Image (cartoon, rainbow, N blue to C red; front, top):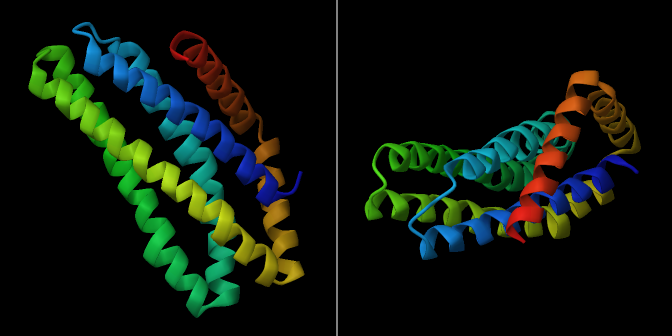
Length: 185
């Protein structure tokens, strides 16, 4: 599996978590009792798997090479689009984490709404973001990056994947995803 295929596979896992977040949000809407611990696990998955692992590889390897080697058009798409959306996603996750803390201290309707707004904002952003990357950004990179750059990205990605700590974290988060899917889907 090459780097682009791996990134797309990670997108599938992130979308699986978005399905869990969606279902958990429906539970928040319909019930007075909210499992804050489960929602915190979702936040941790997003931060550790979607952001640190997946977005980290995109930003450090693929996007960096695209901006360096392809210039103008890639720079606009990456810096004016993808990186801004990564940061916006981080903001929504931070908002969700804070809303969960607030709800835990004060289970008010207002804090419940804050959970729903943050979770829904993140879900909507990421679904659109993934579609753009899969259909446009990755295709553009594959078609236009020099072979030498693609080989370097591949080497960097393989080294990241082979790192013992990264592999352990990835496997742990995928296990959490599976457990949450069993509970919510």
